[in-house]
Image 1: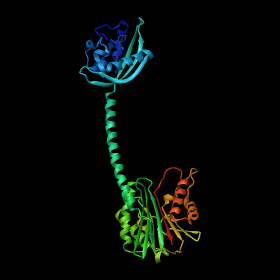
Image 2: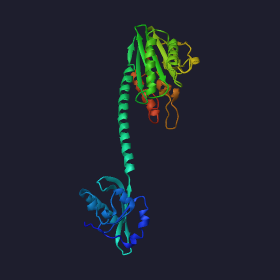
Image 3: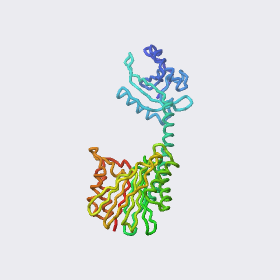
Image 4: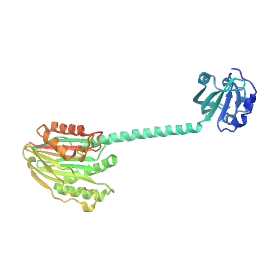
Length: 385
């Protein structure tokens, strides 16, 4: 395409003062794509001298490899009367300035059609976008690190979940599922020879990493406490005092149930603080075993009483312990399953095998629940054989 010094049309000179005051670059090209006008903003943007850009064509300004794209955009502008695209404007020294080109066809008094282009410098926007991309990349890398750490923490926490076992005349079936990657429920099952089988279930307030760390700390202290062979009511008191005196986080509390089986599993000493009632099924009759105390860990004067229930168990009896995540679930009508709903499932499945009973309960809760899991779930079923 030819280039050379050409004169600005007379009709355009009348508009030069107006176009020259604009903050955005303005350039007008004729039907041969020669520059017939460029305002001061455009001259400053490109670092050109006016007489060095007047009459030039894209071939004299842009690299050869970019000309097909420029011609394509020009053809679209001629076809539709306007076009808008993001490209770049080359400076005199070869630097590429990112820009938005808004073009429209204008018709002069002589009937000739020229093209007016507004060139908007978007360098600052591009710098911000690049900073955002960099920040997002850093955030993604950090998130990957966090995900890897949480995955490791979840594996560690799952390794602490007690396994199913048989001790003397009783069998124990367990289940645990956190609402998030890691959770705040914990359970401990600790046989002490043939004399006792200790069972502790705990629900720490809150969700996520903080609750999981606190739960793991209580877990280790629970083992230490149980090794002293103290009664369940005393276990609750000792753990309450430990958390209150050594952790002391405002607003933090936990609930707990402790059971100690003796006489080959035919007798259980049971103490609980703010736990949902344990469910005992004997000869088809269901009995609730309620907590004797309120929440633990938050207030010194809220220490649990060391009392406990002494319950004789017969062959075939089943005792079900669980955290509130199993019953505080809602259906589509916003009705909560509640203890009564769970008790019905327990009663109806009590003649199944332990594994089948556990699965029936979990399936029933999942069917009732509308939406994803909102709280950690722990479930332990004990059967006297």
